[in-house]
Length: 217
Image: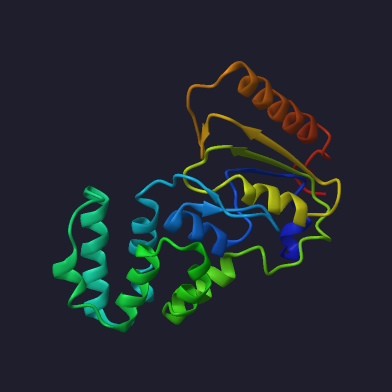
C-alpha cells in the first residue's frame, strides 16, 4: 500500500495468508473461525501457536517479572501442552494475567474484550499488522491466494476475506484440502490439479508483466 512500493509490484502471491489479526488470534486460542457474517465453526489449531505468540510479545510487557514468567510458561507449554503452570501464574502481575487470560480462553465471543485488556504495545502491533482496518479496494495488483482447507495456523476464511476485500476481479483463491499452512501433506488428485492451476495462473501472470529495465534508462 506504500505508493513507491506499489509502483514496483506487478502481482502478489500469498500462501496461508490472513486478513484480520483478531480473527487469527481467535482461531489459535479457541479454535473458532467464521466467514464474514457466518456462524462460528470449530477447527483444530496447532497447540503451540498461542505460546509462540506469547513468546514473540514478551518485549511488549512493561514488567520484567511478567516477561520472565510468561517466557517460562511459554517454554514449558511448548514442550508439553499439558504441563502445569499454577506455580508460575501465582506470581503474575496485571499485564501477565491479561496475556494468560487471552491464551487460556476458549470462548470466541470473549476474545475482543480480552484483546482490549492486553498491554498497549501488543494491541498496537495487532492493529498495525491487520488488513481488516485498511481500505484495499483500490489496489489493482492481481493476487493469487492459496490456502489449506484444514490449515492449523490460519483458517481458510482469512484468505476468503482478503480476496473479498481486494478490488473486484483482482484475486484468485485456490483452496487445497491437504495443505498444512505452507507445507504439502499427502496431496490427493484433486489437490494436485488445484495446485497446478494456481502455479499455471501465477506463471501466466508473471510472464505477462512488463520486462524490467536492465542498466541505465
